[in-house]
Image 1 (tube, rainbow, N blue to C red):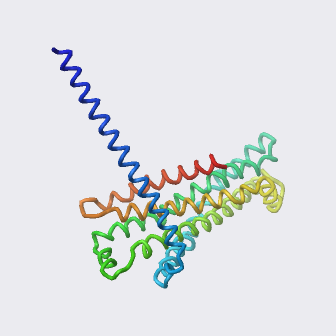
Image 2: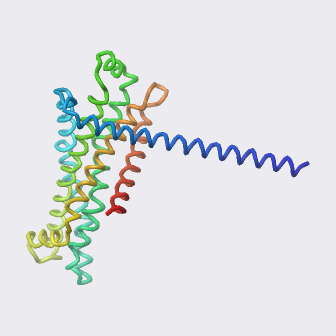
Length: 274
């Protein structure tokens, strides 16, 4: 009798565990499909000429200015820190082992292919994604989403499309500034410490000779896609807040986790495909 009761208890626990796992998988799959459909909808809507009217252009330029121009100082400061921590250290240890000819390859593999796209995604989220989360998180609870519907305006066109494209283009601009400031800082520190004797033009030529055609296409494309996906995650997470019961303070950590996962997944997918 005791064995039968224990067996029934184990079956009920297993059934509840499998039910919880199934509900989690179903919810995750549903969210993933909704996210993919949102991204496809944004691309389709953005390709229409009728979408780009004056209010949409104004929102696009405002978002692009926030990402590419107002974040310039942050990009340069991050590049200086990364140049000091990564490039100068790479040059130092390669010089110590007598492998200075590998400087270009190390910089291309570590910095251009891997680190810059990830840093750009994190910087965009920190500088602009959090503001988007908070702003769009008030869309339903603040009532102005309802005002859009009353006026016959499409929130997708006015809120999501210009932000996603501005983030994508701004990510490319931010990556360019970050890369140049990193390389310049790393060279100046290495040259100042006497680790390298060649000029900055020879250093630039060394890096360019280590790059392939793929390095001129894949890393910029990776940055653009990461910027697009970070904006999409922030817009979807912010607009997903429907009522006051979902506290606004929870949006930022939720958006950060989703954005970080999106950045890592995109980075890994490009590495696998490439």
